[in-house]
Image 1 (cartoon, rainbow, N blue to C red):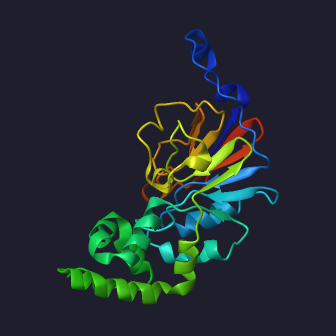
Image 2: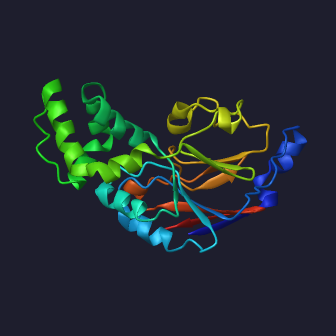
Length: 250
């Protein structure tokens, strides 16, 4: 699927002008961007989508590489093998690392939200009988051994945002009332209540995943690229160049 959106279609349009709503400036990255939405263990879709990126584009992944899909380990191995990519931290990486640090507090939440599929992708089994905090600590130790230092070190060094021109890429959202550089890590990974209902006034377009949409879209300073790959079988990227956004799915 390819959907092209020109500069004139990205502003508020006729009704915005009629009712006095401000028009948003056209996207203007410093270089071409290819921003990939939430992957969630779909290594097959990631491979196909990466093949669609152009050599002169900066590929940026918005996070949520692990959980829910069946091949989180393969996704991380592929991303680690590509140091030319910019990879951001999503809330699922945050939960996984939280489980490593504090399995008693975070373990049950992470396992219920896709962690079971992640640890299975690393060959860790026997988690159905967990009944105590001690069990969670033991499981954490097995997971650390199976995941290995390379993958854990990579996860621990993920950035929270990436900026190019008037385009900022984050995982979940940005507080519309604060500059990108002043955002909290939690907002960038987990969301903000005003993000989807309040337009920014600084002209910065925010590209994000985290919230699944039926179709990727660009409007009012927000570009949504999470099309629920693990459930829909459709992983989407936004090709962003000065003046236009094009959506490409694998």
